[in-house]
Figure 1 (cartoon, one colour):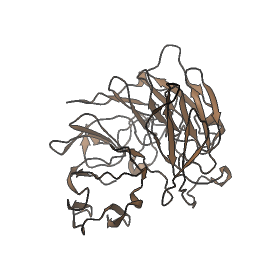
Figure 2 (cartoon, rainbow, N blue to C red; figure 1 turned 120 degrees about the horizontal axis):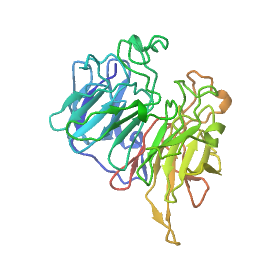
Figure 3 (cartoon, helix red, strand yellow; figure 1 turned 45 degrees about the horizontal axis):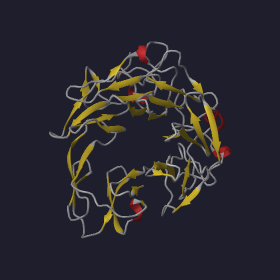
Length: 392
């Protein structure tokens, strides 16, 4: 079971760098052991020696304010935050995978909570289907989606028996197969998740990508029909669909997902000012006209694979208006791994993470090199800060 501490940050320091990597700060790096042999890295610009205390489970409880960005442990989230979003000014919604959490709801372990930012208290929310490895997005009307996920699991996390109704809740956790599920919530007081089988996707999706479209709907792309370290011909779901569905709409097959096995899970997607979607999968990039399924290929990435499990961080840089008066968008990718398709073997691999950062725009259609990271990274995040800095 994952750790569930919630930390409150008092203030943030903004540094005027084009790309700010935590490990690149002029600072000391401190590690607090959480008891599992894995440390939590806390990196800040040094003002003075930090002081910490620990809770009974070995987590850091406080970092002093004179160490920039000091924090305190203020509560428990109830479940592990595998997925989390700020629903409104008072509530954070948290989703875990199905597991034996101590918090209960309706006679089974909870795998979802809402955390009250005023009281620092979690409240269990009921979700019927397994949310492990799902994807999420916000619709234009403020409704949040969580879609796809894992087959139902039984005690110990093993797949529930498919022949005795265990995929429909007849198991130790009372969870259902979540592969086609569309879960919805409109944040606010008393809000609950809805999970209606008549409103499900066309097919199972494990590790899908979602973005919000210009009309407020959700674009749902890729994934696999069941879990795997990397995708396979038998498991891949190289399609996309839109939600809510319009009459007559169905799955679209995506050639770029077909062409980029096995590293085509969680494809990186960005909605461009033209209305096309920039899709990155494995080393390939295409501009997708999602209404028709047309894909316009751009040059391959020359440096690395940047999709799961060699996941890069990505960010759309601040928009610029060209001399023609049209907006142009540039997307930057940092990290990944320089691995060839024949090196994926379905199990854990030992490949150095990549340090490169590159960017591309719809107008230039060519890769440009950015400053590289100080060290290789996979599965990072690129976060826009208020001063235009990007934190990687």
